[in-house]
Image 1 (cartoon, rainbow, N blue to C red):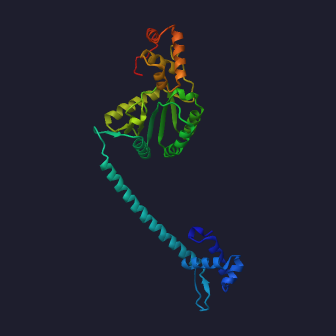
Image 2: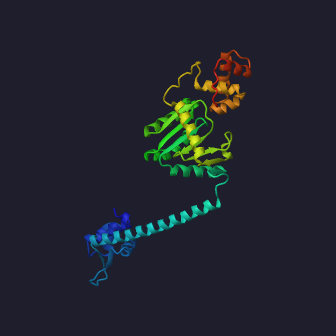
Image 3: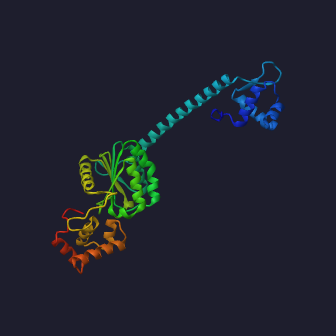
Length: 332
C-alpha cells in the first residue's frame, strides 16, 4: 500500500510490526513477520534511510518506529521534493529539445520558392507528416488514391485519429470506389464515423494529398513513386486552389455507406472514369493504378465497356464513347 512512497512490502510489514510491538527485537520481528533476520535487517536499513525508524531515546540499543503521522509527512515531503526535481529536469529537457529543433531547422532550411518545403526520403516525409498532424487544430482533409490499406495499417492509425477526433478536429477523407469491396476499409470507415470522422469515395483521384487547417498541404512529387519525395506547401494562393479542389471532389463524392448512383448513361462512376482513361490511351495496367484495382479487374472493366460500345479496339471505344457523350470533358 505504501509502495508509491518508496516502501516495499517487506519494509511496510516490518514497520507495522514495530508500531504494534515497540519493544520487539530483530529476532522478534523475524518471528512475527515470518521473514529471515537478514531480510528484516535490510528492511530496517531502508526504514532508517527513510527516517521512519530511529535509535530509541531510551538508550537500550533498540530502534524506535516514528508515528505514522510524522512518518507519512516525512515520506510525502520527500516525494514532493523528488517531483520538483523531476519537473526541473523536464523543463531543462524541453529547453534542450527546443534548442535542438531550432538548430535542426537552421541546418535544414526549406529549399526552393517561399512557401515550398522539399522533403526527400521516406523518413523525412513521415517525420514531417507526424509534425503536421500533431499541430493540427481544426481540420484535416485528405485524398487517399492508393486503394485499400491493410487492416494492420488502419489499426496502427487509429490512436492518432482518435486523439484528433477527441480534440474536435474535423476529419474528411476521400478514398477510391475500389475501397467499397474491402471489408477492413468499410469497418475502419464505420469506426471513424462513430467518432465523427467522414469518409467518401470517387472513381479516381488526381494525387495523394493531405491538407491541415487549410493552411498547409503535403503532396508527393511523383504520383507513381511515393518514396521519391514530397513537398509541403504553405503559399496562400496554392492552398486556396488545393482547398477548392478538395471541396469540389468532396461534393461530388459519395458517402462510403451509400450505394453510388448510376450516371445518366447508365455507367457507374468507376466505369465512367475507365472510359475516359481508355480514350486517353492508357493501358490496363495504368488504368488499374489510377482506379486502385487489380490488373485483372481493369481488363474486365475495359472489355465490358468495349463490348457495350461495340468496339473492337481501345481507340474505337474512345471514339464511340465520345460520340455518345459518355466522356466528361473535365480533367480526370
